[in-house]
Length: 497
Image (tube, rainbow, N blue to C red; front, side, top):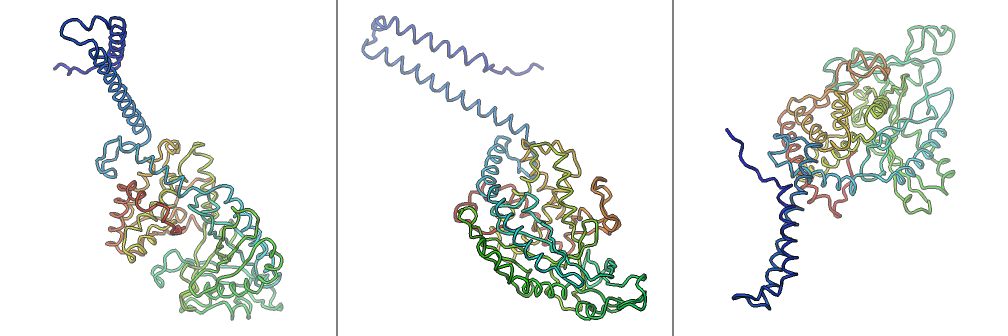
């Protein structure tokens, strides 16, 4: 069977161009001969010249259109790779426009100014450092004197505005006390990935010293003030009571901090039931870019060594004291190490953090299309922790060279499909709990290696997850339309981080 004939445009259009110019020069030199026969000399030559000019313009328009189509095909073949399920059967030429919309959305709405972010970090470090030093008191329960910067602003994937920060404030326990951490029993009060913490005096303390004894619990006043009795488990350190003590301690030491920083910034404290302790900072700098008001969430943390901390469960402030004894292992430092290791291994123009920022932006815009009850569920299910976890799983699968910036749209599509499949399976495991595939270079603590896997979607109902999966897929399919409708100048909603 013979192949169908196809016009060779690389030969055809140059021939047409040469022919058009030859006719123009011929008419220019022999214009006088055009009056022969029925032709009128006054209008025959301009008519032919005008026709040739229109032919030239049509050629140039078709040539420009063909060049743009070929460029779009080459660009799509490199960085997008058609996905019939996620793309809805769209022609590949439309993916170039999709990348243009996403890049513009990132540059105009999501990307942070490194200058402003640097100034904001400097203000946060100074103020929180003053608070940590003011709350330090050797020999009793107090602040340890340092702090740990965690969260998206310090991991380089914060979006829109550097106005919210998270900081761990380690606590210093009294001397001659040790911690014993145990995971909660399966099904215990419905908490997953939770731990209980016991304060004990080591056996080496002689019986004659205050608080001594090999089997004695934590020293009297501390045990009475911050420990609760769990049925069948004994007395354990209460995260709710520690959080209440922490709020009062920070309030007491904030006075001298305000006086020392009154010329640099104004500092206030927001305390409320069920809300994290938040430090509000308003700089008094002369620079316009530094007048951004910042909210710093202060999180009390009990150090366990190896860059691992116990922090109160997010709902501990709302639980009764009897149930507020539970803690969670905070792995923010391990996440920072993993992101740093991935950055070293990935290409110099890796787009993995940009992908995470765009996912956050699309999540915020996609929630705008839902009713308020569903929007609240959407924000909880697709929290920044869930989005970052999905991205980390994809990065660990490798290879890392496919994360070059030219493949941005394809990597975003992979992340969306990974999340959709996880929602449909009702499973998205935490990266650091019981995961043997993590790089050995991270040197993870033993408690994380031996921990049971934690499903981040276990607390949500199946039909709700199915609906969120469908909504996420529709948000990705209609991303340019949603960006055009909801990310204009009137859209000023704060991001969820």
